[in-house]
Length: 234
Image (cartoon, rainbow, N blue to C red; front, side):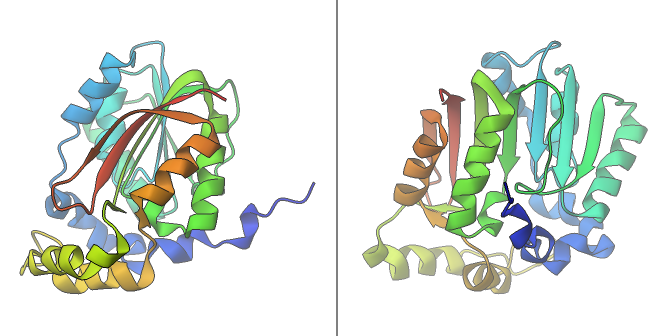
């Protein structure tokens, strides 16, 4: 059967900044992401020494390397060679040797071996248009054993279309003025023009149709970000 996954260029959709070594060098400082709460949540769901976890859109490896300290093995997947090189260098410095690095995206990743226990993805799925999101979610479900867990965090819009001006206006007004320490208004506007955040009331049925039960969800107070903890049931 012909695969349609190759029809979409995930590298192009990721944005040129994620391929730029200069941007990648400042990425961790700018995002200031602490993975400890996410690791703790997955530990509560059974993440441990016998577990395999796939991190899709792993970026500079902040979460993957933290998870590798408690997981048996981690596969860090990203379309950007600059991101993966940074993740690998950090692992070398920290002495972490149970992470595999794969250059691929949601549609291009080809898994070998048994289904995994966990898939984690943060701030990456919004690069795909909705049709491809639905395909990607089903592909992630197929990676995970029955009863395994998907943890998804992303820019997702938890409001109705008539609230768009109010909610996104406040989000834009709250942007950082310094691109070195946070996301600027220009970067937010680029996201709205060129990327593909989805309304919660569209994404959540996609998760269910992909074969997941949504066990827990939370929306950011700004209503532009959400996290989902899901179990694969089909």
